[in-house]
Length: 157
Image 1 (tube, rainbow, N blue to C red):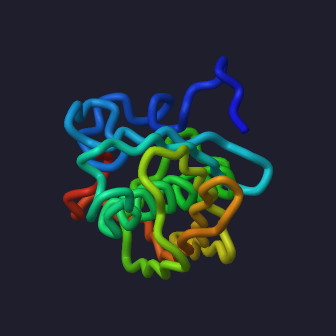
Image 2 (image 1 turned 30 degrees about the vertical axis):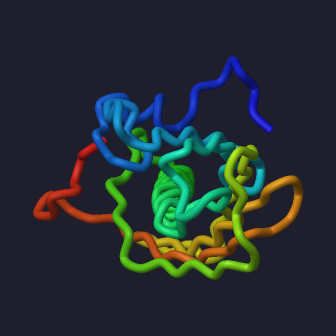
């Protein structure tokens, strides 16, 4: 999936980010690491005991946070690439949904992919899928939009 010599998009573009889900500078956060693929972004995630909703099963809110951040990064990277921008656009989550198909087990490596379905000048529709041992556990859809300097999320990277 990833080449260990490559930086995650978070480490490449947002070293100082404090975001709970994806901020490298937040030691108490999830600190996801997303990597480019030909289809979008991929990531793996190692769960911790505090991520459980009940013994052996990951909390749905944690899954939502993984989808929220990973999907947002897929949108930002796709908008940057499409616009041939030298800087990552400041994108935020407009909406996202999560559909659970089966309990996501604790203690296993989770694999999450994010793929842009529709891309406009300032927004992207993204599909996120969470797999555990090649079984689809959850799927999400999100709308992520670029914001301007009047928004608190502008240039937070």
